[in-house]
Image 1 (cartoon, rainbow, N blue to C red):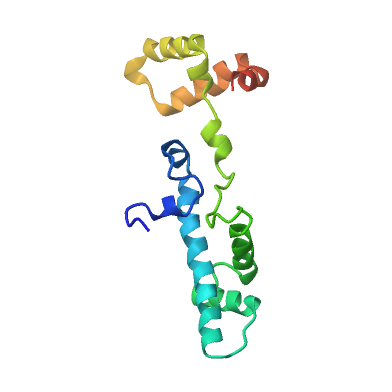
Image 2 (image 1 turned 90 degrees about the vertical axis):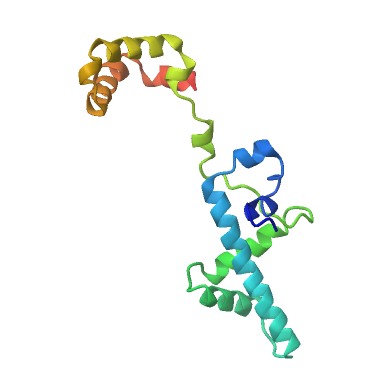
Length: 156
């Protein structure tokens, strides 16, 4: 596993630069947690087998959960193990859909040049006294009143 970016080997398709770039920080952190817990459960099961002490998969997952301070429950670990085996033999996790909509969201200012010109002309009219608060007020009280929800939806 790459010491610099270990998550790349654990997320399906992350070897591709475009997919890696679109991988959220959540996925990068979470995939390491998933593997750590599943591996702990498997290690407990193997140790139990070597010592000829019967142990169920459920008990192994409970043990892995306990070893990791019960941050994730045993059912979650069982689910993650099952998730690994739904990828046609490729034992890597798929990217979550969490944050996918925010990655795809586009600013209406980027899509419609006239909006950017309108905003820049307003901001430039009093540049010495421009603040985030004033910009927010103008956007909420002037711009958004004129620019309807329908317009925002069609620009995305």
